[in-house]
Length: 324
Image (cartoon, rainbow, N blue to C red; front, side):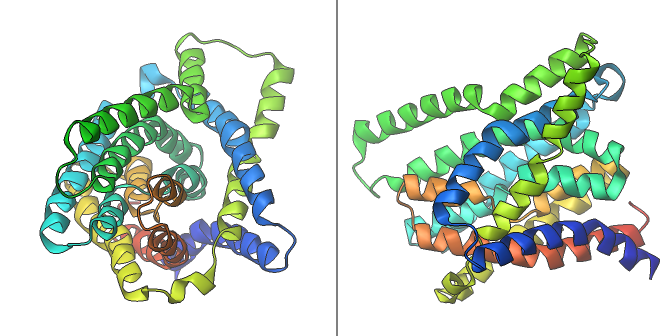
C-alpha cells in the first residue's frame, strides 16, 4: 500500500492539472487562439524562468554528472537509429513511418520532467531533471528535423534539392536552438551557478514567483489540447505508437540504466525522459513538414492520457524494487 501511495502522490498532482485543462477546454472557457497565445507565453517566458531557476540551484562543481548526460545522449541517438532501421523495413508509408520513428525517441520531457521529478524526489529530483533539459532540447530538435526532412522528400530523385533542404533545415534548427528561451534560460542559470553570482533578494523572489507558474500552466494547456473525438481515427496504429513510446522504449532503456548503476533522483530523471508521452511539438513539426498531422495528433493525445497509467506502473515497480 505504501508503494502505491508513493506512486499516486507523484502522479496525482499532474493528473489533476491536466484534467483541469481538459475540463476548462470542454466547457468552452479557453479557445484555440487562447491556447496558442498561452503556449507561446509559457514557452518563451514562464518555462524559461523555471529552467533558469532550476539550473541556478545546481552546484555544478559538486553535482555535475557527466555519466547521466552521456547515457541520456547515447540512449536518444541509439533509439532513433535502431527504430529508424526497424520501421524502414516494416512500414511502407513514409509519413506514418516518420511519426513512429519520432515517437520512439522524442518525449514530452520538458513539461513532464520537472514537476514529476520534484514530486518524486523534491529538490534533488528537480536538479537531476534540470541537468538533462538542455541535452534533450538540443538532441530532440536536431534528430526530429533530420527524420522529418528525410521523410518529407520524395522516395526517389530528390537530388540536390533534398540535400539543400536538409542543410537548410539543420541550419535553421541550429539558429532556433540558439534562440530557444529554454536553452537561454539554461545557459544563464549555469553561468550564474558556475560564477557564484548572487542575485538581489527582490530579483530572486520575483523569479521564483514567475518560475512557479511555468509547469502548472503548461500542464493545464496540455490537458486543454487533448481531443478525444480525434482518437476514433486509426486508433490501432495510434495505440501501436503509444505502446512504443510508453512501454517498449522505457522497458528496454530503464533496465540498462539500472545496470549502469543509476538510482534515486538520477534514475527518476532518466525514467521521465524516456517514459513520458509523445511531445506536443511532434504535432507542430508534423504540420510544418506536412507529415500526417492527424496521426501525429492522435499519438500525442492518446499517449498523454495513457501515460498517467504507465507512469504510475513504472514508478510503483521501481519503488517496489528499491530503486527509488
